[in-house]
Image 1 (cartoon, rainbow, N blue to C red):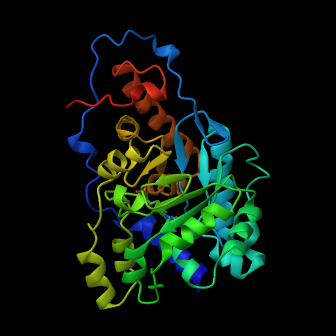
Image 2 (image 1 turned 135 degrees about the horizontal axis):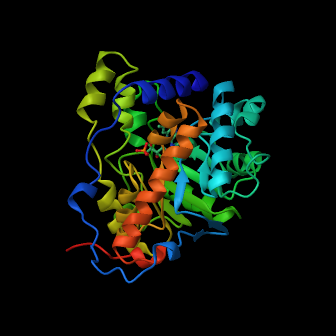
Length: 328
Ligand SMILES: Cc1cc2nc3c(=O)[nH]c(=O)nc-3n(C[C@H](O)[C@H](O)[C@H](O)COP(=O)(O)O)c2cc1C
């Protein structure tokens, strides 16, 4: 069941128009410095995220797991994350919690021993029998540096078969974060997290997953009956733009991953200027993957070059220097 659903999601994301809404980055400009007072060759992207140094402030976000093809994708992308020394997240591990034979489709440490690696489960599962034990299993299964608990209330409501009980999750997430030794990151998948929500969470980081990139409402609209299609289309632009989430949630002072519609290195520069510690990307990565792993490398090289130009033109020698460099 769930593995078939994951395959359908992958196919739809690759083949259909699944992006909706606006990130808000088009209305934000980085502050140009006609005299950068920098040598291009001195620009340094290195950043630290929890216990790991990244060569660039980028995470390949959770995409897949649970099938043979997913194993190939996870190994390929994790290998690239190792080459670039950037972060990587596996897709929801629920299929492997339910069938341990699927665990190997998520296991990438053999080829990516050093990367910042994120385990993944849906937070809503905490209302469907999951607890500390399942969270620990997900972490141990892949030797993860952090556990991502994703929030997807819109997607679950659009899916006729979705899990719709989202009651008391704040308390349950906080309990998990408190009990686990591994950091917990709470992540939306495309409708965004506001400061109002984030400030109730006692987690180690927030991945804002804002509006303007992959719309899970739209993805579901391609799978379902007439009711689902209509509902999915109606809610395709529901949520908080990524740029707003970042500037809002970064007030909390914990690490923020800026994700949802990050498409260029300039978007990344703007996200960091607004307060993100690093950015997360999913759709462009999986689409590049369909052309082979070299296409993923090309995408990342171009993305990093664009970020470097943005840093040069704002006179930012390192990632931290970019903070606040927005035209007002
Ligand atoms: C094919 C595909 C599958 C995904 N599966 C998961 C998942 O299992 N768990 C999760 O937390 N997010 C999942 N996501 C969401 C992404 O990690 C990301 O939060 C979202 O797509 C927004 O980023 P984007 O606009 O760069 O695609 C998936 C995204 C794609 C494109």
